[in-house]
Length: 171
Image (tube, rainbow, N blue to C red):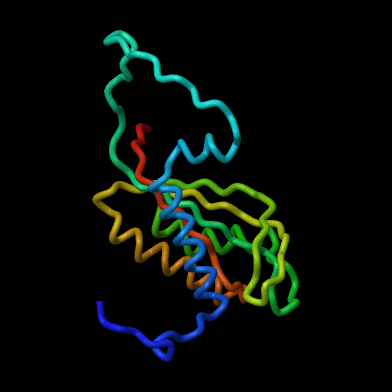
């Protein structure tokens, strides 16, 4: 490993520190897994029971899909009026439905997050849930990133959160 002096290090921005903290938490969750959750909750770990052939899980059903959840805030950082239900559904009709015509789900919620200035924000929000075949993941990824970009631009949002998971789906 090469020698690094103090001038090799640059101070990180608040955004970089936040990204590092999220990445670190994700790595910790992946490497520590469930035992860490039990230790954190100070609950006795359940004992493993032997599994008989009759109690073995059934074969997986359904097809491999990706589930993507997007989280949209409704308050505008510039102080403009909140995004209304009508505006949000018009956005879905124009920017989401054409790329995902087989179906989607929209749920209303209450969100909380820390903005770029370190202020805790609470707001009415929407969760958009999409399922698409793994084989279509690259095409869908581009469409989803365009949806996020368009919403941020139209409504002055700092971010639209995205969560992707591999799932098996049977319709």
